Image (tube, rainbow, N blue to C red):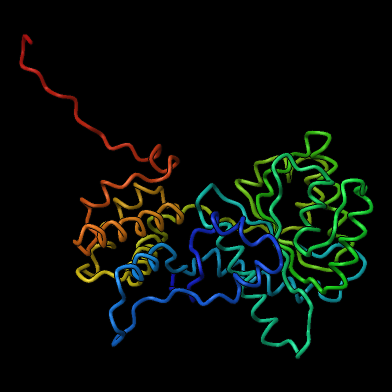
Length: 344
């Protein structure tokens, strides 16, 4: 079942990803007070507070997040005392706007907070690292991104080997136990520089005693986990598919459950509870079942409803909102051709 989780500072994982690529920024993200839905007896929020709330909104704990959290916990325990070879890893894959980055950040946040609760006073260890693969990644630029996360100084004259030594030493000393690598589809082992980057990443997994989780768009169909180099990474990784949510699975309707969870978090004064789940077929067609597109549609509609004073989300309002191009290309309302009189 899809149930509301403790909300995060931003549901739009793609937007948040670029802001948490240093340890200090990730720690602020993890500890930030999350936005909360309106509570019974709570004083009404101001217009500006409600606009800000719907801009951030809540994160719904989807099956993908649940699965990722469970498997990460298990694999971290499994690899805790493993010494001889690289630890087992995870691949989070799926089309764009299906919640991969959100899932990655939520699991990283949970791990960071769990470590903070257990840590003794003065503990300076770093439980989680979050790194974005740069476009056209080479071994050196990828190594530099890992260095940047922990503030390791990198000079232009340094070789890849020197940066790597510094990264491996610092990550091990800092006690990094979970490494989240996002936008892994940007890695292209079919090019010379991409192949070197893939080899560098494999080397890193063998030298840093951490659990690695990769996320990217349709990773299993990309060059990253195919071919000789890809097989070495894929052979150690389990797969989590963040695909679009189906309208129905057996007797359940996971997409409708997601809509209901998002509706329950709205802060609108005149919205009719249950009206959005009744629009599930329409919303599924509008968004192709993609979580990111659905969240954006509902958040944007809520903001429009506040600004125009209607304070409720209707099918008419939803029809006026332009979504991301991917969703709009999928959803093309049919407009009947104009009929003309015979002979005209």
